[in-house]
Image 1 (tube, helix red, strand yellow):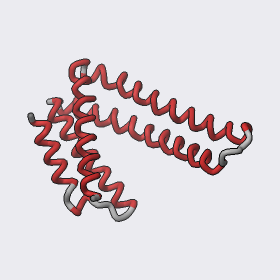
Image 2 (tube, one colour):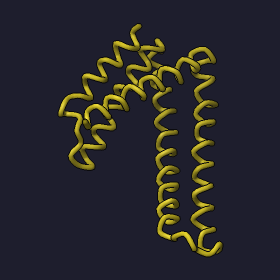
Image 3 (cartoon, one colour):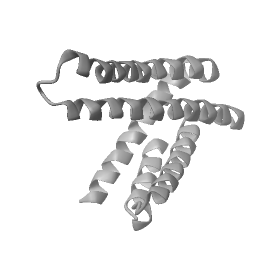
Image 4 (cartoon, one colour):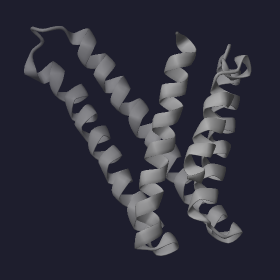
Length: 150
């Protein structure tokens, strides 16, 4: 299966020293390179036309930017909750807890938004494969990164 060939390619790429990020700039550059590889592998596996690929990337990147904002907001609220301690009064906890809940709901909403936007572009069978292939690739990347740290 071609997917495993791409996963192997990604695994080899992740085991090289070039992948290790030394700074925030390196980290951003690494993320961009990984995203390009993942989009390329997804597009190839799903056999998307150039136009579909371009539209898919635009949709996914737009959603991802919103996800990053929501995730940062959730992490910020969680950091505030950690600082409060165990015996904090309800009024003090209420604000950060509401921000945590809202950002968590935003993340779930963004998953649904991605689905609604990709469905007309890819159609049900290809969208189903999109989620499976994306999950397989993400799992392979995580495993490669874990083994690289050892």
